[in-house]
Amino acid sequence: MGAIQKEMVRILAIQMESVIGELELNIDTVKNLLIANLEKYEGADFVFLPEVWTVGWHTPAFLQTAEPLNSSKAVNMLSQVACKYNVNIIGGSFIRKDDDKYYNSCPVINRHGEVVAVYDKNHLYSYYGDNEGEIITKGSNPLMAELDGIKIGLTICFDIRFPEIYRAYRKAGADILVNMAAWGKTKKIPWDIMTTSRAVENQTYMVALTQTGLLPDGKENLGHSMIIDYEGKILDQIEEIEGGIYAEFNLPKMYEFRDKCTILKDIKDSYEVIIK
Image 1: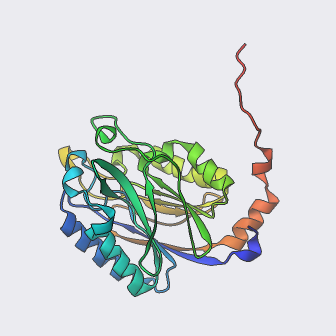
Image 2: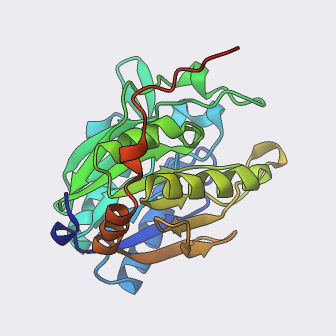
């Protein structure tokens, strides 16, 4: 899809601090943050939320806050906000119950409040005392949401360590990439490098969104959410507070840049390694 078919897109991302295991309290917090920031940044086209905002990053609490998609209080709140403010919502993630399985799922909601897609986290984090892979069922495929003619490649947290999924989105025509996370404070360097790299290597705008705040056992979320352009420039960022970050994406300019530097044409069909 060429540059003349794309327009300026207004992006809002919300960083927040979840209270571990407190579903209804977290719903109220996010609702208030959404309303305050959507009124501040009037006319936003898309709003993004972080990973597991409904429960916080504490795997023992995942199952107690799990909800079926069709009766989810969290998704219902997001749908109401989407309708009221005429905005598309990339809903971070909640723990979705489907029969006897549980997923770390991102609901995608259009301006009419309709759930048009659900992305299930493809790579599950089970290191350094975390056991997401023992509780959560991994998603089977990447999923790119198309809203208002804009294609958004969806990823959640640990997915960032797998550049293959982002390249697949770029090859499929992604305009925007997003990683919605609950990222640990001790891993700031990997977060900064990997999120920026995904934008640069794919010549694509990137929303890198995480939580802030304390976790059990003295751990902390990083709280360094960023909006990054296709050349690696940070358009807006926020440190260890709750709030919103905002940017306008000039998609025609991005496509002009891609047309001048056609890196996808240089990708080889095979990268089979020869060992001598």
